Amino acid sequence: MEMGFRWYGSQNDQIHLADIRQIPGVRQVVGALFDIPVGEVWPKDQIIQLKHQIEAAGLKFTVVESVNIHDDIKIGLPSRDRYIENYQQTIRNLAAAGVRTICYNFMPIFDWVRTNLHFSLADGSQALAFEQRQVQRQPQDIIHDIENDANGFVLPGWEPERLAQVQQLFDAYAGIDEAQLAANLNYFLAAIIPVCEECHVQMALHPDDPPRELFGLPRIYKNLADMNRIVAMNPSTANGFTICTGSLGENPQNDIPAIIREFVPQGRVPFVHARNIKFMNDQGDFHESAHLSSMGSLDMFAIMQALHETGFSGVIRPDHGRDIWHESGRPGYGLYDRALGITYLNGLWEALEKQS
Ligand code: DNO
Image (cartoon, rainbow, N blue to C red):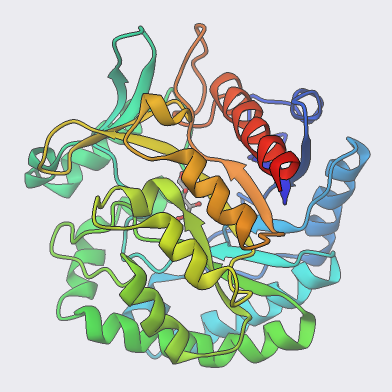
């Protein structure tokens, strides 16, 4: 297992590589080129520049999060082939720079959805939260709130230029149900997995967050049964998963240790996001919490134990942190609480190593 930390690059992140280097036990920076429009090829020289920057700080760069998928691919428009060719080229360029894992998602229009970016917790910290009744509102209102509450940062997957066309996007997705979206994923995988195999890159699909239908849009990676369907589409191990404990854990029916025990031994899990959430009621409303098991609804020890037992050897990163100690950064992506999360996860891991 190698501990990583997500970083938005020197132009887009208030956190410096030198700060990340000081978090005990961090080896990897999970990065991306955030300025390339979705669908365009990531130029090799820019990827190599990022790699050199990360390596000069004494850290490694083998996981990219995310190379986002153009909506035309998810909708299945004829123009998808051009975007798929671009994606193939991006895979080759990333592989040439030593990247081994590409995290991506196949969620229509929205990446993750939260309805409050500054939910106040009893200890005075703030966290991201999701309340179902809030998504009865128009998507435009939610976009407006998220953009206004993000402390001036762009949140991952919430590119303002793309979301300015949200009504057109909804129109374009009309008639795309789960079966059609799954067929479009299948088409995409059939085109890119051979390229991944050729370049020794593994794709790591991120779960739908939250893992339930939203705004009438289809969702295809919500639980273990969905994962089995995705494996059946393309059994190559290059067709892998990101296990995001928070996203999957937002459905209390999901048994995350069982999911880990199923897919890690298949060699299909190169990347894990570790995060805890706390349910606020039995309607599935939740807020994110500190990583500690006792602060949330997930048993983080049981999760780490399943990873340890199955010999997980990929990269794990703390997922969203709370805003604490007066930090006001990109919501979910501050330094302090994610660093605390790392220290806790490393403590659990050390105990597991020494007991085995
Ligand atoms: C949110 C992240 C997601 C994730 C993408 C992967 O904070 O977990 O934006 O990176 O869904 O493509």
